[in-house]
Length: 495
Ligand SMILES: [Zn+2]
Ligand SMILES: [Zn+2]
Ligand SMILES: [Zn+2]
Image 1 (tube, rainbow, N blue to C red):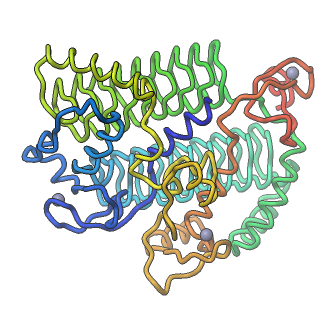
Image 2 (cartoon, rainbow, N blue to C red):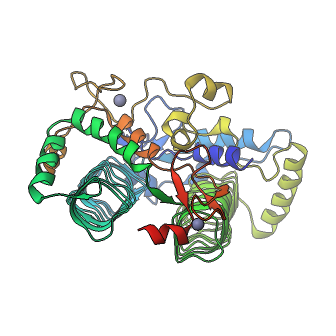
Image 3 (cartoon, rainbow, N blue to C red):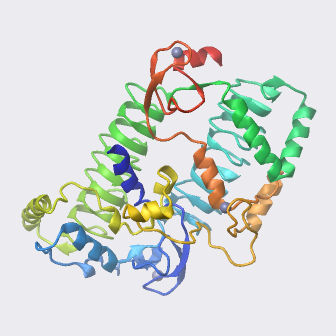
């Protein structure tokens, strides 16, 4: 139940699939998460945020002869949506769910970055590419769950690791290659001391060819599993279950959250309070079954709500609005149902009536059904966490986009060594690889993204035993995974 619910929510989160289309208002060519052939209307950011755009123009009466979701679907197709979810960025057209970025390309769910490419969930990074869940890094490539590192390539779960390659769970290290669980070391290869020259020679060999990198990548995976892994990544947490939690309190089954409390089944949030079953709840309070809902209060069953909204239900792409039900693209509105204005008194009577109606139609307190998601399954984050083939997705009622590529490509581009799809290497990107000293990629950005995502554990907690003391632990490593898993106490003794 938890996973099928989350899968539906993810299917409403298109983070990194970009298309070219024209704005349905001004006709300008824009980058958008909605392709030109989409049945949905999309405006460029200027037109969508303009005072002259009146979302109530598509407003309609509620029809008690029809199910609610059918009427919502019709409204969704009739109301202009925004091309990209961005704000205050410079020269960063191909970014989404992203704010305050400069000169970034193909970057999503990321803020405050400069000159970064093909990355997701990165914060305050510079001159980096192919990184996920990484912060405060520079001249880095292929980093996963890494922070405060410089010049490092394919490092995971590391912090303050500089000029190093293929390191896992290392801290304060420099010039190391293929190392695991090291603390404060310099010049090591496969956890053994080496000279600076030996490390440099190996680095040059690796940087020289992507084939060498792939071969080393496989060897390192085999080496890595011989070392103890921490059951769950938690830092200064109290009474929490989940993984990748920092300074949190009373979280149940939550992942990738910071300074949050009293939440259950939530993913991605800083400062979240009392939220349940949601993805993307930074500074959100009392929200339930929402996707992308920063800085809001009391929102239920909604997708992409900009900050400073409250008491919305079944709303999508809505800004600074309060007490609305089943609305799309609102801006500073109150007491609306299906984008139609009501008085305060009429509104509460109508909402009660609609909720009774939804009990009869079996829609009561359900999240939006998969069939009315404006996105194809394989262009959403659902595909990252619950991978489906085309046939499986269609059989389960999801939409599917054939010939999918996150990147817009023109003919004559190089072909991916793994999937054969054409992909693009921009001149800025080439310059960055030059600065790092790394050869250009021979795989498309989707294959590279999939590889990085596969390096992270599932967002699931299993009960298992510590491999050393035998005590019960909760871990994102299942018993089927071959890693040695230790409780925090035992882990700290060996590093
Ligand atoms: Zn426009
Ligand atoms: Zn590929
Ligand atoms: Zn133990």
